[in-house]
Image (cartoon, rainbow, N blue to C red; front, side, top):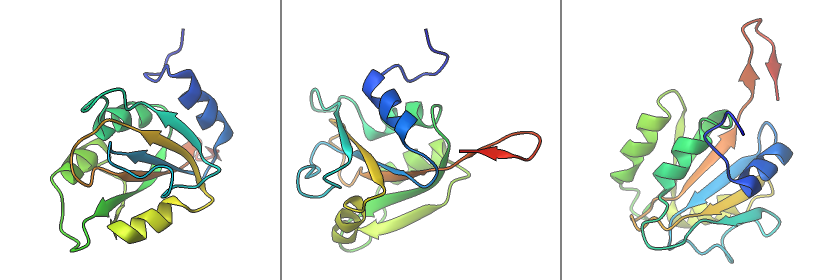
Length: 145
């Protein structure tokens, strides 16, 4: 048995291959995975049914499994803030957030450092999130990747 909340073998395997600076796209159920993500990123499809699982639920587990140092959210073309962003900020209170307009977000999601794409069944508008993996700080002040 594992001591982490995450027990998904594919996610754990991919996380083991990623390092400091790697990014993970956690996308809602309407995201164009085939055309707006890094083609080399490993894909994990958790979108079993509408509403299962949500980006927030995946983030809740992921933040207990890997250090997150930065987050980027997709905003509508008009740049308006979405209610779902409050959920993410509650889960990552000390993490800086970037607000990226929809089509610029698609470009960001196609970058080479996107190492994993997790598709969810989240039906909330603009629930897409990219998190950047950080590194763990030890009490002695030394970090490991």
